[in-house]
Amino acid sequence: MRLRIGSRGSQLALWQANHIAALLRTQGHEVEIEVIKTTGDRLQEVTFAQVGSKGMFTKEIEEALAAGRVDLAVHSLKDLPTELPEPFALAATPVRADPRDVFVSEKHANLRALPHGARVGTSSQRRRAQLAALRPDVEAVEFRGNVDTRLRKLAEGQVEAILLAAAGLDRLGKTDWVRERLDPKDFCPAAGQGALGIETRKDDAATIEAVAFLDHADTRFAVTAERAALAALGGGCQVPIGIYCRPVFDEKGATSGLTEIFALVASPVTGACVRIQHQAERESADPVAFGSAAADMLLAAGAGALLGGRSDACRRSGLMNAQPLAGRRVLITRAAHQAGKLSDGLRALGAEPVEVPVLEIQPPAIFEPLDRALRLLDSYDWLILTSANTVRALQRRASALGLPLTSNSAAGLKVAAVGEATATAARNAGFAVSLVPETYVAEALAESLAGQAAGKKILLARAEVARDVIPDALRAAGATVNVVEAYRNAIPEAAPRLLREALAKGIDAATFTSSSSATHLADAARQAGIPFPFADVRAISIGPITSQTLRELGWEPAAEASPSDIPGLIVAVQRLWAIDA
Image (tube, rainbow, N blue to C red; front, side, top):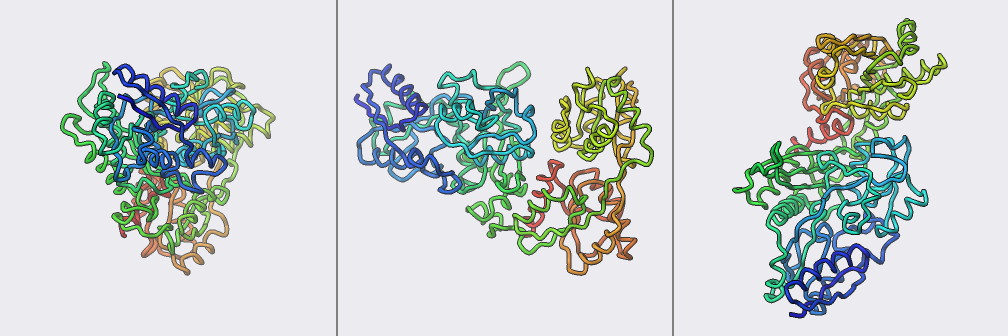
């Protein structure tokens, strides 16, 4: 049988077309490839966000398919819309290549190793959003072009790193460029990434039969679930969405009989994201239902607010406004120099942030214990950092003493950070961070470190007033722990007045980023003569410890962030009103 394949003309697209052509020839078919230039190929200097990516790489190929100029098209499946036009069918999904994203750099070993302010090239909104969540201190740079063009720009020094799909580099034999394959749990791929889609006319039974042997059952299940989830979320809207389905393996590497799906929806403005993970029995699972359930879980977790009314999913969640927090006044209690990211994120979603800083960072009352610890830093096995404020306090004091403050200045010193924001601040200060717990609370850090703490000498730098969870747990595990005060939290003199003014104009919710922000707001309220908790104001907490402090103060949180960071707090605010909608 003579078969004509329609393909884009890029190096990768032609590799894919030739790969399928070679497989078809093994079945005795005569195969030709027709190169077709698509809208996406012509608009190399225009960002996807400006024109939208739906059909950019498929429209002209489908026109040739409909006209009978070609019999089948070979697509990167992630470029193929979730709903094909009526004349067409997804006839086969061959065995999937590596679906992960990869970190590519000439000088840096992995994403965590990038220096503060580094430029990372990517044209993907999904990659930009996840990069913002993992490394908010680096800059995403718009980067279009084929694989070779992007690698050339990297080699020229236009950026320090780029993010690409693993499958493209693997297929082109360019794996030497790969520095890190990113874990889908942390960096979720696009629906269908790494898979090929063979598109035919629905009424072309002969071609459909000719390509049927290419269809791979496990790949078909996975990408069907992913595309079903994407369709349910409104896959054509310009919101970062990642979805990845895979089998679950046991500890010995054997199939467990389960299948799992990771999915996220993120804000391209704030980096806030909602993530879910869902498992089901593979044998009994329907892929469309499985994917749709993942979409429903995302909506239940607050993703509808990030979708902003752009799809049927948004309407199902009751969110018709592209600025879902419009008209809401939200109290920000962070220290003035730290409020920006939270305020900017809420403002971008329509809220009016009202900044009333109830924390002011001050130096410790006595410097001697901190100074002695800094001078003897190389005598410790571990340094534990509990906040970005701690890192900045150590930097300031070390600078005043004329001491270096990096991992290199203390041979053998390992650094543990309570959360990713603290870890980012530590890396920017020159530390190589060895441990960040999955859950950003003191209990999780103590548990993660306890197993290797016996006989170790540990320095814990923190605020003047803090819980003793970490030192108590590590001492019980056999470590010697020195706790030093790096800074103090004080109530700014203007806080009571600003609080009275804010409440007089009306506040819908108050956000709390630490237990200290809760206790200090309560103290500021007492100084202002205002009953605490505030009537008709909802408390939104960054995590379980802060929530517990609020409860001890008599205020039940209306929402709690997960994960316990600023993007998670923004999502918690969105979810609160999504539930009301």
